Image (tube, rainbow over all chains, first blue to last red; front, side, top):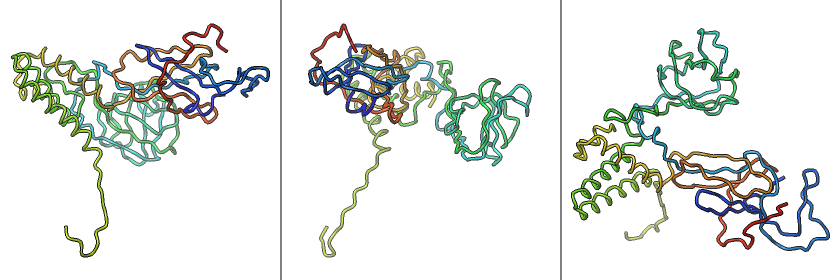
Length: 239
Length: 92
């Protein structure tokens, strides 16, 4: 059994590999049942060892990725505003309400904003979290439909949120949208101008537009991290 | 914002070049800050220290190992120095 992994595990990066190390403070450790025991005859010392147990899905890597199919989307992300939330949402896998479809029901009638073809993300459910594409929208505000074989039967009760996400995999052409918000899209425009200046041999111009690019990227970040500072002033303070 | 609108704003006429530059810009943005994080999980194997990074990775945000005593993933630290052992031919 692994415990205090934030204190007893370390990693190293080697090219495209991660090396995992376990820190042990003692002699050879053995496992008896699910308990770690230190063998009494061994010399006590601290050391780094290879992982000494199997942990299913034990390593979790959080990262940013570059996937070409996700760069261009079929709609501007600012328009993906449909959203529903509540404890009245249930999932039906057998498609009995509309033959050939799986359905997401909301007895609170909160699904009116979703349309056929929308990409949606479900969170908070017991067994239906994930991304789906709506294949029909015949149910008005009461239900939305997804192709068969995607859902698991689930009664209402969980606090579930469904929200629209951009449709990925759009053909990369002039009509496609870039999967970025408006501020970052403007930064990309500056990047393109910088590249043009570089092609023209205007390095000063390139540097100018690259600065503009990074300013907008930084703005996009700082806009989400507004910090307000308040401090008391004495009654007769001159400011 | 559509690709066409970006091309007009930047004064670029070639669609192919514009698409290539957009990809470069997105790559640069993703290497500097962590929007749209992805998660990759792998099995840890007894006696095996080497695991592969996701091939579509641009930047690592965090690496965690599951604490099976409370079923939580906890961030682990990067070793500052290389360990003395370069290869363990008899791991536990």
